[in-house]
Image 1: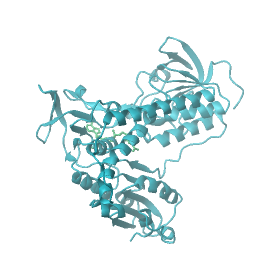
Image 2 (image 1 turned 90 degrees about the vertical axis):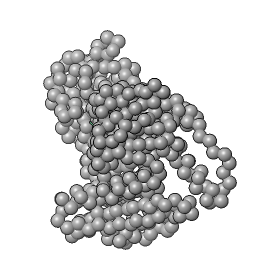
Image 3 (image 1 turned 180 degrees about the horizontal axis):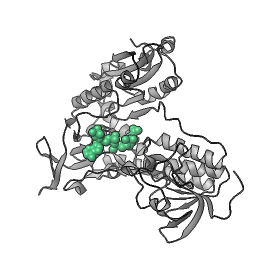
Image 4 (image 1 turned 180 degrees about the vertical axis):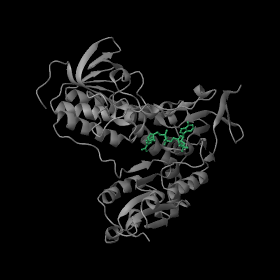
Length: 452
Ligand code: NDP
């Protein structure tokens, strides 16, 4: 980095210490920049504090319900089974505390100053903290993430979002989940396994729009088998608390429904309001997203933005890459930008699904000839367990060259398996390359090289 510009208090001031902000701050500091970061909630951001990480732990916790049931089929005598939500909740929250501490330590080890308060941009290169203190910085990075969107309806305040789901005092007996996306299907799997009666309602007639149709359909069928109810083409009319304390939900196209908890999982909106961006020449885009160029720079040359607040791809590893590329570009003299092609993603539903590249529908629209290979199988473990759940792997290839355009999987450990296979898809390998690889037997993953 060029010599420090002492005209400003800091070379970089980052607003928001989530995945993108922390990576950008610590890498910029390692490049020699004088860095400060402001966080009004907890260092770590959505993923670590109230998203991916605690959610995955709940998924693990919930899965024991099935595992304990299946254990008996494998000869184990399992004693009385009891589940203690408070024990799981508090173990998860304790680990969140541990991670929060590690993230703070990472920043401190890199000599990044942390302000535990809200920051807003109040003038050119000027930031004002909630305490009233004003500081200046050559570059400001906005990494404030996103927040749950709650549709407007009478009684909406009676519902909760994923933020609150991690802090419940008990597993609700009846849960109505609004939305059919990631969060809806993940929490449906968790609450259903933990004994709740779960209903998903969605405004459209599908779940997980954007994923391959065959996978979506398989998850829907398995979820129904597990006892999750679905209500499609349903919009809220209103939510009211009845005398007994339950929530009475009325919706279009369906009968009223009683629930003990309504969880909104209806998308997330960029946290861009009230930061003072417009006054500095940054006009917000659709849904409040901050428009940026491929180097994450806004229309104002000293303001940058990374992560969910830019609404490019709302995924943690993408925010981290954007933060890294920003720091390398601006403070490391290595201009770099993120490659958004072939980003793998997963839904940690029961069972999980994972995907990389084009769906069959997208590939057929983009390419003339497309060849699709599939493996529809019952995992060995499910046979003895008497669990009638079939996995589905699907490979979408360019009909001419055989290059893999998309790979889609639903079944146990699908995200673990897909991460490795995504390397091959990203590298442009073909179906023939997969066929040339000897199967690793007996595994579920071997189906990847045995598809017909
Ligand atoms: P999603 O975008 O996945 O799903 C939102 C759902 O809400 C969709 O079913 C959508 O319907 C519906 N919806 C959207 N707007 C409205 C509205 N105005 N009224 C009623 N319904 C509406 O969002 P989530 O909240 O589940 O998750 C937010 C984001 O967080 C995800 O997009 C993802 O990027 C990230 N995430 C990633 C995870 C992972 O990687 N495993 C886990 C959790 C979250 P329709 O289908 O009609 O659009």
